[in-house]
Amino acid sequence: MTDTPENRAARYPLLSQPHILLHGTVDHGMYESFRQQLGNAPAEGTLVVALSTLGGDPEVARLMGDELRLLRDYTGRETLFLGKVAVYSAGATFMATFPVDKRFLTRGTRIMVHERILTKTVNLSGPLRSVVAGLKADLHEIEESVRIEEEGFRDLVAGSKIRFDEVRERAPSNWYIEAEEARDLGLVLDLI
Image 1 (tube, helix red, strand yellow):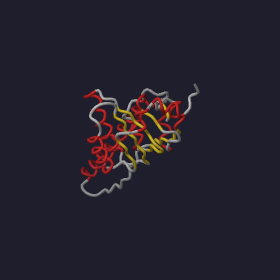
Image 2: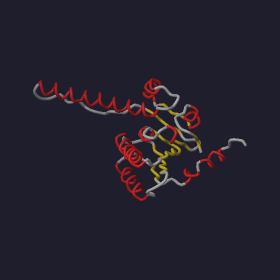
Image 3: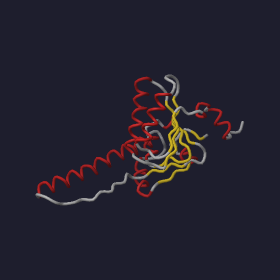
Image 4: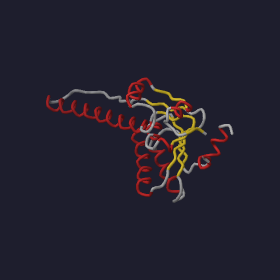
C-alpha cells in the first residue's frame, strides 16, 4: 500500500478532532482560552492540542507547555501537538514542550525559530553606584533570557536529528522549516 496523506491521516484519527484549538497571538488571551478548553476537555484519554500562530509571548507559551507537562507527569496522560499552517516563534516554543514523537504538522505548515527579541532603552541617571547596579541588572536580565532561550532550543531538538548548535547558528536569521523537512529531521513524528 502506498503511503499517501490519506493513509497517514487514517493512522492518527485522534488528530482530526483536537480537544484544544489555539490560534492567533500567543498572549494572555490565548492562555485564558487554553485554560478554558483544557477544563472542558475529557478528563481521560489522549489530549490533542492544535496550534496556529505567527508568534507572541514566549513566557505564555512556556506556561501553557508547563501545564501540559505537569498533566503528563502527574497523570501519565498522553498529549499530542498538532501544528497547523504556521508555528512561528512562541509557537515553536510551545511545540518544544512536547516530545518529538508526540508532535505532528499538517501538510504545508511552516515552523519558524528565531532568537528572543529585546527592545529596551537604557537611561543613565543618578548616583554612580545605582547606575552600575541598574546596568548589571539589565545585563543579568539579558543573560537569563539567553539561558531560557537555549533551554527552549534544546527542548525543541531533543530526540531529533538537529544539533543544538545548528539551531543556535540559524535562529538569528529566522529559520523557517517546512513540514516535510521538519519530519525528515525528526522534529515531528509525521504529517497529516
